[in-house]
Image 1 (cartoon, rainbow, N blue to C red):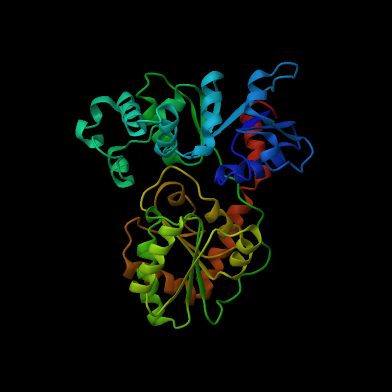
Image 2: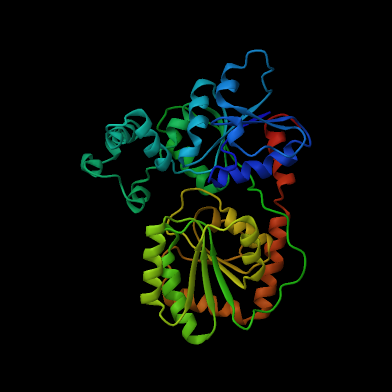
Length: 390
């Protein structure tokens, strides 16, 4: 089979996911990874049965056998350009990692019309949504993420025009894709698939450290409710002296500096760190030291969170927003809070999870159990079955 996908070192969660999924797939079938550039620019697979091929070579296919199945791995970033373009040429099944594709199509509009990318994006939105969108909405600037969510603009219909079927990771994403599919006047089968989680960390949960460590893992942005987390942490620090907060993940330098200034203003007596993007070793070290994880979202793009999966597999008590894929996680494995949770309520939830050891231990056990049921071996077998390769 072929996976048309981003691949390391692409700065994409989909690239990392495809790497982990390819390994158990290759135990059953030969796996060809179709990348968007020169093969030499990408990490060479270490697993037998996994090979790389560039998009152009895959497109020409002269003198080489075609794969029995092709799975297009589509997400909401520039790294999916070759995925989209090959899908348009040869329809097939799509693993849709994000049900919100305005980021990708915003990028692609610049490829289609470099002199007027916004105008091209506006055209695409109006082609898909027509009279549903008030003409004034896109007159001068892209819609904010809040406004896109309010209007229900996800831009998945273009992918569905070429997809034979669509795989998603949550019932939330399933409903978004089916709703958008109705705009096409054709039915594209949509299947909810489990999201692969890393191997569980063995051992029992230790009591919190004397100076408890709270972490947020993943991209640092307003949509992750970072402001609410910092304000809640300020209240927590007044009750638990010595508590620390590390907000680790990607973010541009200007944005991280703004968040650091926000933390100095709103949590002057708390220890808040923004280390930026962490390498694999430092990421694992932070997971090993964390006493509590807080992973919030103001809205859902229909995506699953690799960072949340890492926290669950490590058995870290984790607070998540009750929305999208996170909202569908088992109630005994995570603690759900409303997407618009206030600092006071969030602070109280954080404090209880740092001080009530029986509750912490029960969450940790359930989190590890949930992760164990969604190993990449289990997920690979599910895809092989759905694609008729088992």
